[in-house]
Length: 462
Image (cartoon, rainbow, N blue to C red; front, side):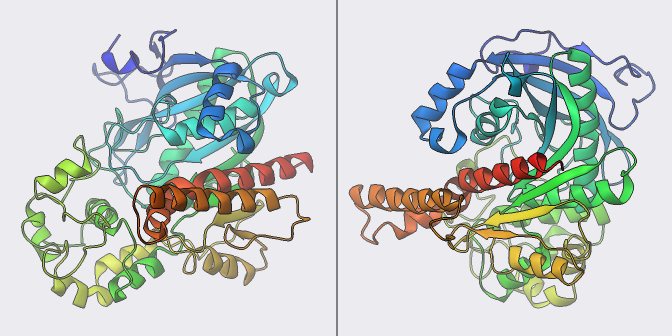
C-alpha cells in the first residue's frame, strides 16, 4: 500500500482496490476509459456522535443539525482527460452515509460538489479531519443522507495532470463528470446505500463556476446518462470577464495575486496564445517562476518570502512598483487573448434546464457579488429561466423560513468584529470581517440555504 492511502483520517480500513475495467495503465496496459474507476479505499468511518461533537465544537450544529448518519470516507482515483485530450488520473473524496435510520439506507440522492480555490497541491476532499470544506460537506450533506462526490481537480492531490486547468469551464466540467462516473461505480460496488438517480450539483467560489459549468455540460452533452435535479452555485465568478474587467479598471479583488497565476498558467497551457514569454505579462522577479507556480507544495507565506509572489497580505498588488503584472499587459488587456479566454469561460450564454439557485454576499471582497450573481440571474431571466439569487446581506421578512440563516450570518459577522476589537483592532473589526468574509463567513450559511433548496426540490419530486 502506498503512503497516500494511509495515515489520513483515523485508521485505514481497506486497501486500494484496482478497478476491474482496464487496469492501471502504468505497466503497458490499455489506458482505462474516461470515468473509469482506477482505485479506491475507505479511509475512515466517522460516527454520527463524532460528527456531532465536531459541529458542536465549531458552532456549526445550529446550521447543520444533528447528524442522522455516520459517514464512510472514501478516496477514489479515476480516469479523465486534460484540456488537450491527454489521458490523466484524478482523485476525489466520496462521502457515503451509513447507519440504520431511514435517511441513511436505501437509495440516496447524490451531491456532486466543486471546491473553492486552493493554493495547496495537497488539497484533498477526502481529508475530513483537516480540510474545513470537506468537513462542512460531511456535516451538512453526508451526515444528513446525501452521497457526496467531491473531485480534487486536475493538478491536485495525486493527479497526474501537469497543471491545473483553473476556471477552464469545459475542462473542469469534464473532470467533474468523470469523477462522478467513477464514484458511482465505487458506491455501487461497495454495497450499502445506493445512488437514487437524483443528482444535485453545487460548489463554492471557483467551485461555484465549476458547478455551473458542470450543469451546462451535463445537460448539453450527457442528458441520456445523467439528469440534473438542481444546481446550487455559491459565490462563483460566473461573469469571469466582468470580474477581471473590474480588476483591470482598478477595483482589484482580494486574492487576485493568487488567482492570476492560476489563470495565466491554465489558459496558456489550454489555449497556447496568452503570452510568448511570461515576461510579456509579469514583472521581474515573478516572471521567472510564475508559470506553474500554483498549486504548490510550499505555503503562500514561503512563496512570498522567496520573492515568487508579491509580499502583500491583501493579495491585491497586481500593478505598479512591486506588482505582479506589467503595465503593458494592463494597457493591452482589452484586446488581448487573455481577455478572450476569460470571455470564453464566462457562463452567461446558456440556459439551465433543471432548477438552479445562486447564493453569496453583497460585501464579498473576493468574488464581487454585483458583477456575478445578479448578472447571471438577469441573463437567465432574459431567456425565460427564473433563478433565485440569495444575498446574505439582504435578509427576508422575519416570517420567512430562511430568516434565521440570515440573522445568524449577521451575528457571525458581529462576533468576528468583536473578537478583532478585543484583540486590539481600532477599525471596529471591519478589516477582520472583510478578511474572513469570502473564505470563512459566507460558506456555511450559503451551504445551509442551498441544502434547504435541494431538500425542497426533492420533496416536490424533482
